[in-house]
Length: 434
Ligand code: ATP
Ligand code: MG
Image (cartoon, rainbow, N blue to C red; front, side, top):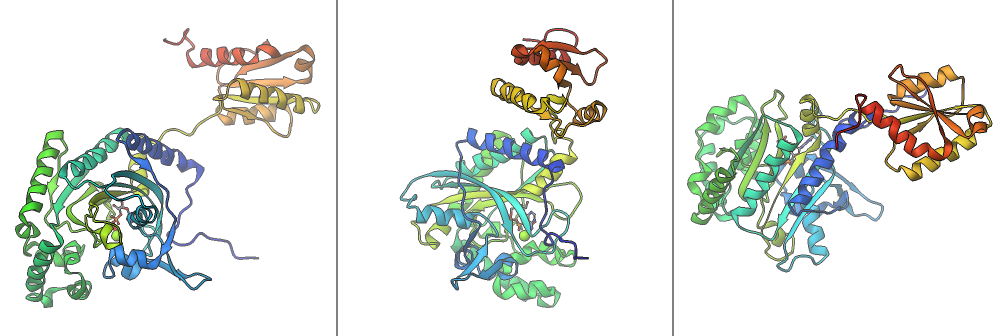
């Protein structure tokens, strides 16, 4: 017997039973982003490895140990995108879209990181990425954060906490990095193996350590906030004031540093309080230096990415996933001669009523079996197209979830008759309001 085929570890199928929640999430997100003036962009899933090394940074976990990198048949080193910002910036540069222009963009798609799979952490996962390119002020930061808050509200996801911080400019960050390194070197024996490795390469990431034994040392570390340059401090204070003004609550987390190197000034993260280690559902920050670092002009920008699986899980747990769709009409066909005529009749009905969900009972079978299928479909109404009915130029209609009897309508009146029957079944007491 051949071995059963399995999906790759950490890469999930999204099954029809789950797709309703995904589509609901996607359509709410799409609609909200459009209402804020964001436009969709689609970029390749694969880019040159070099792009991610330059954008994300060689000493980050993502580039250091999580990328799916391979050599293609032409000998180029390519990588499955671990995040979307680098590709979007590359697209803006290579399509000549910068030159002082502003862009508000979003992108949905799968990302790839070779992490240890667990609930909420996968090797292929989906993100909605949102980027505002060309604006430097804290107003765009505030609006982007408010957009997130509004999305959670529309989706009915509660209990998310917002943490924000400022990383300052690359200069103030470098100065802070030196202070932090001094402090950590002074306590080197207390650093775990991971942190010892990071001390030389990326000491800021040590603040992000999840190891409980490291927390006391981290609490005692100098705070970045104390080393901010004046302009970054102003930027941050204005952002905080604007968030208060629009009523978005937040907490300043001076340890929030984010895992990618390209951030400066504003960084933020939405965190779920529900149990489980994978608590970040949306994270982002300002990246004023990235575009010039990748060869574009010095355009400021800010963006964030949401983890779709994590948000869909919260949405489902909150009971906000819509129920699976059911057909409006199920068509029972009796008699072998009727199949072609029934098909033609129903195609005609689809033309007249494009929004109607209609399912045909294929392959005939006896009445009882077909009605079992009709009941299982969840449709409120069955149409019966049989030789006898067709000979008389009528179609029979039967409510499926009520005891009321069968009626008939002339073939030529099928569409309005179906409308009327469905309206009656939806509002049994009388005419629908309006
Ligand atoms: P984490 O701290 O959970 O590793 P991150 O800081 O690496 O997250 P980002 O790179 O900022 O995450 O990605 C943005 C969002 O994408 C995260 O907030 C999270 O919701 C989601 N995400 C990141 N990595 C994964 C993953 N491996 N599986 C599922 N979702 C993920
Ligand atoms: Mg991560």
